[in-house]
Amino acid sequence: MQDKHNMKKIVNNNSQAYFQIEGSKFYAFGFQIDSEKKVIEIIKNLWKEHKKAVHICYGFILKQKNYVIEKFNDDKEPKNSAGKKILSALQNKNFTNSLIAVVRYKTKSLLGIGLLSRSYYKVSEMLLKNEQNYLPFYETEIITVKITNQKVLSDLLNLIKIHECKIINLSDIEISFEIEKEKIKFFEKILF
Image 1 (cartoon, one colour):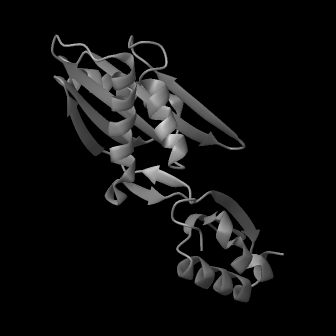
Image 2 (spheres, one colour):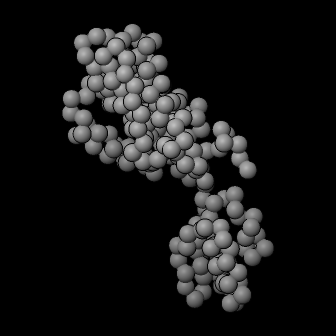
Image 3 (cartoon, one colour):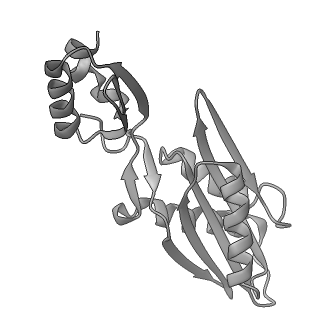
């Protein structure tokens, strides 16, 4: 069993947090992502919803195959004061395939760079600390098995059901299913 703090996590879609300081309001929104294209789409939609916002800064971590993409955007806030802080919160809390976008509204009062940076980090951390805002993240693999006889098929279907795997394709000659990498060991007797 993985330690709750060390396990990989993924943010729930539409999770939110709010923080206000000296006339600046920070609204953090969390989203699950599977591509950089999805990030661009989400940010465009946030601008449509928050037309009076001054900034929409973000950070994200995206695992694709064998590499990880980590990016951020300060949206004209001082360099490394916003997006980098959001990304740091995601890294520190062990998130993956997650985007945090922070929408900022402000009055005429200015925050110093230190307070500004801490505010972006704080609202992101508030969102990520709330257990209702995330799920455990499990890496998966798609496995295809040739069906040699009815017993193999029956055993596989039982294991797939027990371990809550997702069947991708089933035909007379083979079965493909998605499985959490940590559960492959339960299938080894049949697969190998």
